[in-house]
Length: 228
Image (cartoon, rainbow, N blue to C red; front, side, top):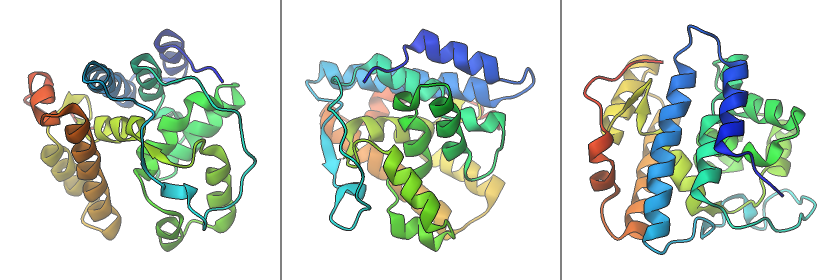
């Protein structure tokens, strides 16, 4: 199983990006964060493939056909995932844009590079949480079939954290990003969980780095968020 290179992912992003849209620049900034964090993790001796949580891989998960193992993940893989993580916004800005982006990549023959589309949307949510948000079982089964592996890995926390670190085109602290989202979309159980899972991803990275991930990010923070 091979992944898109960052150059290839950028070409797909450019091919789908409207001239006046902010989200393509958002994707490039998320890729900048993901690459920075992933390289620091590798330098610290961490494996991006480290399993952190069973996630959808427990005994209650839908059974899917087993697939061959993939090559170890690299920072470049995560940069590519980040570049296309919001690709679904080319069609729809709604809550299912992550799934739509994955489907676009799958139709192009690049399903293996669509994990970031899924994990930045799910952020670690379980199937029961999706049902509570009125997603039907058929869609949940399709998402489960698309996730490989079903476990939550350190790479997934990198993507989740990176997306939670960019407000529009600006790289910002998590608290700023979450305040921005609440100002735009209002308070909700989904938003509470979004913040909780973003902070959980940051904690995963801090543990793996051996120092606060915020220290690594501080030089990248921009003064003014630019809304998507």
